[in-house]
Length: 216
Length: 215
Image (tube, rainbow over all chains, first blue to last red; front, side):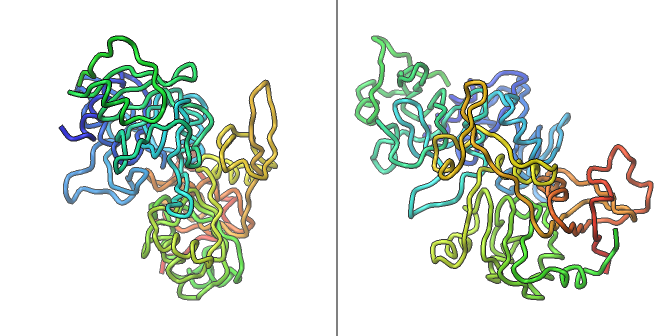
């Protein structure tokens, strides 16, 4: 299975009925594809939509119904639309149950860096800082390493997105939680050994005697 | 409210003006007004908006034509030309978290001096800003934003200037409509008074100064 699919399928298991969820661009967007059909979740697009549905069929795109990347989407029954002040009121005001975002680095205290690489990539933070500061629960969806380099590090070398630590990081190799200021290995990826995870991780991990494999 | 042709509306904007422009990745941006700004070559503009769209679309057209001195936005990552001009020192870019940006504009339009937010605390965003402690939590003081002009795109405008919006084309539009000295609205459809019921008016007519007339 491709790394992105492993990550998306594992995160889909964190969603439950009735939650208000914001999915970022990239791997996070894939999470919606692996939700069991009998679970109804409200997906928010921060450009002003709750009830975001799959992309429309060919020829059915509405120019005024898009996701936060500007791509055409559909609106599910029960959807609502609103302005950006309302959208970020939902995010900061404690109404958003979960946000899933991509990451460049996460350090062993759970601090996330995902919005710029100085002098190389300065896209702007968009809604990321508000999402990490304000959502009730924050999950990072990212590949475990980039070009062989660890992304789960001792201390972020890139500018951080928020001081608030993330709750969970899901990679193709591991599920790691960050409660109590420590990085704890909760699950291993399919066919992955604990030794492989340690080798691919720079942060110090708290590891129990027996670590279960992630269920997809 | 006065209805004006787009040429006359844009002629009111001087070089060096600050503009708030509605839209999110070009969705909900007044394209006719943008095209006319390019045609009249208004220069040294400051644009306050969520993003700079893409080359050839919405605010991206103003970037392509190099009409901006500065932009205050939350995201420029999908417009490589904005990034190029920024790196080359041709364009000043102030990046603001999206929720903070919209609240700063809301504060500007609602008569508030600023807002307190936890967003950005402990990050590069807090540089040079006042931190205020309230009930044991640390907040950044983010000051209000206003502009000379708001360029608003609505879905429906009635003859009086009441506005309603469509789906995700609403975004920054109703908020910027409150935060500028002169509000120029453009609409997909201009409809008779009464078509918009009072409950469906999002921006009330008295805040709209000019409505772009159908050509």
